[in-house]
Image (tube, rainbow, N blue to C red; front, side):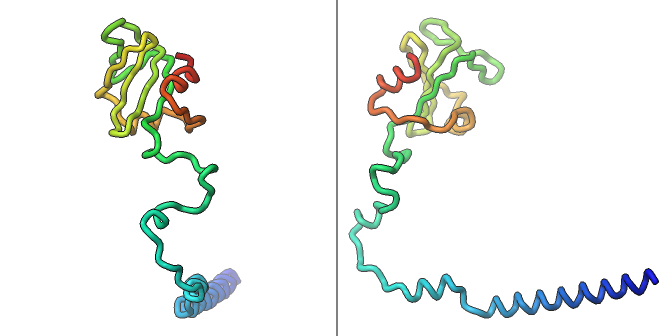
Length: 152
């Protein structure tokens, strides 16, 4: 009795599998509706290079600046900064916490202490910055406004 049910289930499964393969073969031979819709759209007139680069959606006033439109990114790092098991200190004043971390265009990372001393940190890179920074919440037109926003 058990073997009959199992044999019937196997036959039904194979039949459904064959029907599925047949459907896939039919669908593979039919043209895609997306391709057909694109073929019906008339070709757009040639655009100049400036028009081709600038997207029209979303409107310019709603777009966030791209990475090439800003000079760099900054975040506040309050706790001590430990790199390769070593706590980083400011070479001029010796402070070891409450940094502003900058990630620049060339993917270099700079540290700025509260006293305004800046030093390039070779042990950090843009990948570290991206892992440890949150989403960008504001864009500031000047460095001073950004520092004021972050409490420096």
